[in-house]
Length: 146
Image 1 (cartoon, helix red, strand yellow):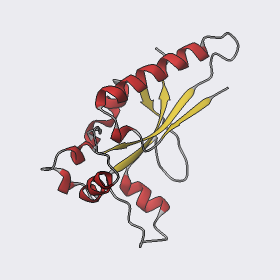
Image 2: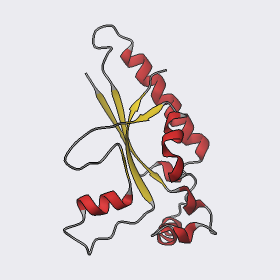
Image 3: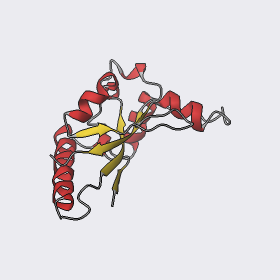
């Protein structure tokens, strides 16, 4: 039986070391739960959000649509952005943490990594007054138990 873990809106507020610890611990949980005989061929998945790493640096934050607004919002609730992913290196980031982007075919043409532009086109295209910021990205990945 497959398992889906959901981790949304969390990683941006954690230090990078804590995010890496989460991935490492999740792989251990998956390894233990999948080592139990029958059904061990099941797959585990993680759906999570991550922030564009450029919002961590005030010099590059302007390059991310909604980046300054998010940082102001976070400060207003007593938080700060502490981690993110270089969006040009998503596959490498995931693979380095035992995750593989989930690839699926469908009418949408989307893969496991959904860019803000794809979200805007596929989910908000009928509502152009709802802009999608570029701060957060979504990912569905297969978890390697190794």
